[in-house]
Length: 321
Image 1 (spheres, rainbow, N blue to C red):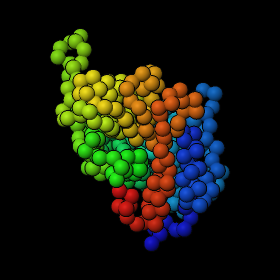
Image 2: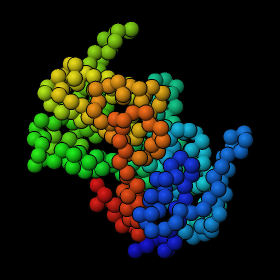
Image 3: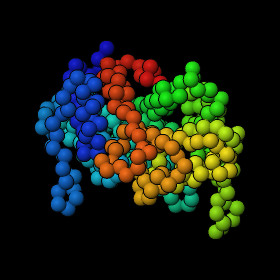
Image 4: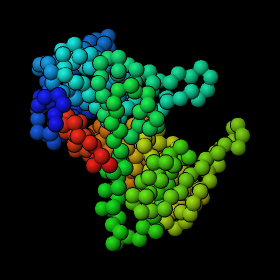
């Protein structure tokens, strides 16, 4: 059953246009024409060049850097579609910025992830489609339906092809959580690739004393796969990789994460680290002049395309997991 007529339309902002084009190619439709630009003073401007009246509209925009520019583009696109009488508006946000600000870590902190959720709803979004929120509880910040895709499905396929069980003994591999907060997602990933689990526990004994890394689990002589949801400056990930080798005695270290934010010294740190290969998905666009040969990107646009088909057709997306 199609809930909102046969007319499906896809538009995008400036954050990840190639990703949107790939989704449209998978869907067999043309990317909608929209003029998304910025005035000299930085204000975002959106002009839809096609009618969307009564259409099932999907707006594709990662809120990656420049985060605030991309977020405002998305909010204004939603408002433009609502005022043009779109039948339903789905904000497709492959990478959801501000997700790390999901709680009050200390007094007088904001909960910015909730604020962004309120803004998207107030702008007129009817539902959200995203992947690997930093904290899955953020789904509860929305009072509209949210479909939460998982990047581990793509990584499971990649590593099972890279290290097939009929060639490699998976008892010699360990999935590693780079910190205690990522244990849940690392455990789920380890179960799917039939590997053991270890945790890097970092502690600072007292002020101005460097962190001490403890390895919970046996990694000596084993191949390790560090698994996380995002990599920003790569400090924690590279320190964890170094601890696995120097403290745990690991044989080799691979790493994967859904979102490659890669700010500041991230590239230099990854290049200098013992990580043999760093794998991301393309929820955040790849830098054209990526200086590190260690980095590889996997395409998750087909996953989003299938999810859009299911949402448009009002069918379950359970098969995507």
